Length: 275
Length: 176
Image 1 (tube, each protein chain N blue to C red):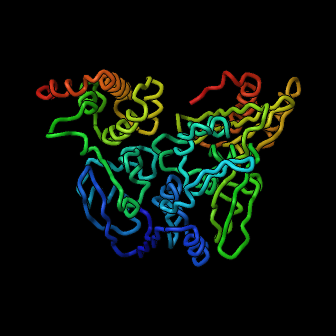
Image 2: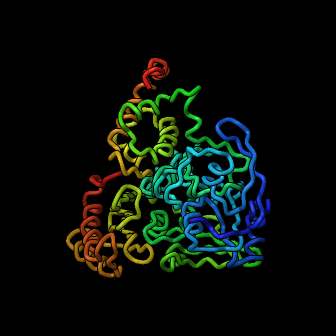
Image 3: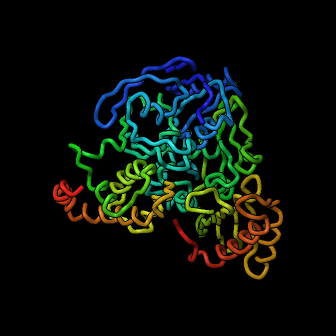
């Protein structure tokens, strides 16, 4: 299908973006990589009056390693992180998760913050952000700059804490902890499809912090005990997610994936498939 | 730059090495602009939501879904479509390998796949089969089962490494 008509502004600065969001609020949508927004525009699932293109706003296209986190600006594409050699040391979980996101052709344009803004329950970047305890930075023209914990930011299917006049100016991933290992795994119908179940793991000596995507209406992370108590803890986690049947998989199959993939990822992480 | 909805806006871009001018409403997808206004009908439009990969073109050398870009976003950019591959009516090495290996049947998906391959082989000059198949996961082909495509891509990668491709292309000039 073709998108309904809208006004278009190619913004030159962050201030211009904030000004336009202030004036137009809910009638405006921010266009970054377009890998989700353009599809919903074409299908007329969203029909904004104004599209604000941030692709040429240089000040939003920055990656900074500072004060214990990696800050990724609103216009930074996924491929920019894939190409960042230090990422495997800085945020190893993200380095392992990136190849699972869509396809290289979509990672070429798709942005990190765009995926966070879209808040698809099966998306890999929101899952990593929640699992690592990252934050989302929101800015508006008149309001205060807010830094929201990822776990509070994602509120449900395509629903977030972002207010209509706010821009997600960056997201912050905590840097790797000493002594922790990070692993990522997912099952989809085919390479690059939406995950039936996606798992992000931060493995510490005294426990496993496991994030699950694709099952609940948002990514969920929990710390699980290691050893004999693990199977029961995984089972409780699997049931707590409120899995539902859909055309791709039954709720029971999703729970089984959480239990079995979760156990394998925690107990035999070196056997995890990579992409 | 402000572009009101119902008006057409001037766009200048470099298409396959030539400077081209046109105009489009803000909502016009890049793929439709390339086909209808600039005549680049090698760009095929399939699903229009970024899943099938048929409309893949290079934007500033990077494989991108042209259904997920607005025409106005391509203003000032360099765009390459499948029309850029052949020289003097001779198909390039990749196109010739696709022909040899029956890497297409109906051909609808082919132009998008070729453009992905162009960037992929620049980024990954020594791919293995798993890598090629991962690259192809961004494209839907309902005819081939992908086997011929994988063979063609791996063969061209090998030829380019050994520098045979130029010679091969000349030798095949009369065969194709």
